[in-house]
Image 1 (cartoon, each protein chain N blue to C red):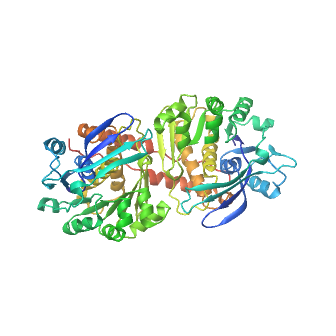
Image 2 (cartoon, rainbow over the protein chains, first blue to last red; image 1 turned 120 degrees about the vertical axis):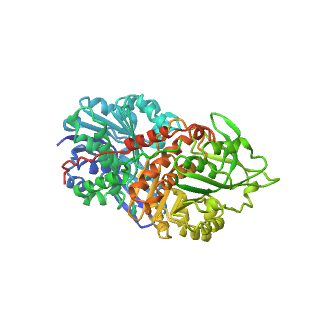
Length: 313
Length: 313
């Protein structure tokens, strides 16, 4: 099985929605990512936790075969904490509290096993740390990163440098535009490709995702989910499914457009499950058959055959 | 050739964008719609104009074979006027002025030929007028309507009644949610289907469109357009391509899911051209070959083939 290392946050989330409230959900980008990627690749997670992170939380990761040897426990520290509320329209969310805690001074330390992974995913952390990790994983066959508006604002040149060092960038579509100061997504994505990566994925939330490569464009609508309970981590699950699927094909060398497209569908399918319950709950019960079935559904709901008719000139 | 009647606004638009400014563009929902539908069906346009509407404007419609016998000239009146500005991000627009003029007291009067069209499109006008027209066109094989937030707010029950009388509703996705007071699009669209129509199309602007039928769901990303000059009328061109394509298949009786999906692709393709120039300029030079080529491109940029791999349980 291919090997994949993800570096990012490990968190406790407090989430309020119209349907319920949870005080202490396992969360964080590296957690959501690794639970998703664990279906496709042997995944190692690198991130910091505090004394409050216990066996129960590790058990969730271990149940999916995720390696946690590089989860760094900071003595006397507390785990990153995020609290937020979703409105009746779950696309609107308010952050109520963010305590970086041990995440504030996190410096990733990767074991030999993590350093030697075939595929590396740099979750949303300070771009200078992404660069440092990327440099250590010189042998990775495929590398990707995520980021956020904060780093685009305050660490712009570091982020551009980090982007120049990876094969793939995953960002929200608004972030792709913000990063390049270009309001047209097609031009914005092309500007990111010009920085070095061969793949740019623009996540579009309830609308799906768009993928740009030098060879072309792929648009994938989101799976039409009726019951969105908690959208937290959907983007990370998406990335985990996408990068995980690619990791499973890392022996291909350069990925074909067909493989990249399929990967996006797997990412989208996994993300559509993530939102069906609070925190990681749905991912903990998810089965390979459910994923495969949903990808097949995605194929059907996006397909049309042209049948040209004579048009009036 | 199938026959199609569209009732709606005919306008002069003044448009400011980052790339230029035009004071007097031919516009209005019925104009944008009919130029698009003219590629597929013999189109009759019903709407009011003032003394300021002249041969030059009629010539644009006639050049595409659109019948204007039911364009009502109101003596002493002025044509509906809209002025707006688009930001650098063309998804953001500000209305600078709206003068309803002759459109304010418009009461559609349809000739025999218009009444007997196989397909009827009720553009965005007062729902009570949509109802009156729909009742007169009792023999139409397929009927569709558009509306807007204003009518959802101030003429809600009339609009629900109008919707119950048509086969298809086309709205922006935000309007589908607003109409049903349901923030989840899937549930919202289902609630609209429950009102009577068999097809609900949610227009999603730069993200594409989603179509809901009792049989299922179809998601279509927008064609990735790099040069958006003027988005005015894109939704109407979309509707014109979609309904026009269906009109060309009106002899099928009930439309198959495959036909409806193709129709959406044609609507999307035509709309993607509309935005490439100011007002109706691009539609005036558009050719059947260009449309066919773009639909074919849409097929390619949305297609993926699944290739299931063993996933780790």
